[in-house]
Image: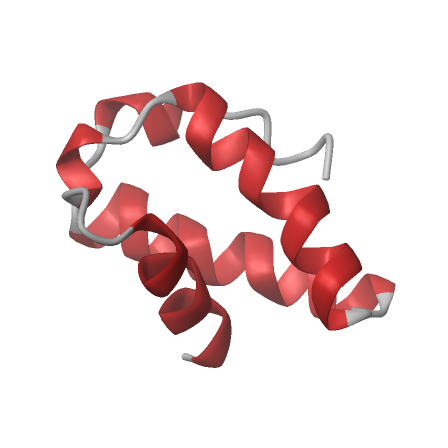
Amino acid sequence: MQRAEGFVAARRPRRLSALTVEEVTAFFPRYAREKHLTDCQCRQTVDALQLLVVDLAQSGAAREVDREYF
């Protein structure tokens, strides 16, 4: 939940449905660096964002993000 909330806060006031692949991709390294995340926490972030932007918000762009890269 905390990871998804961080993403939403970083994207305000943009709607999740209006996200681009670049916005989603750019979030991961910056957030991990700022929060000093471990590998496990990075994986949690990827999973949380998949649930949020792909499964719940059904963002088309988010479906195109290579989550295995992160």
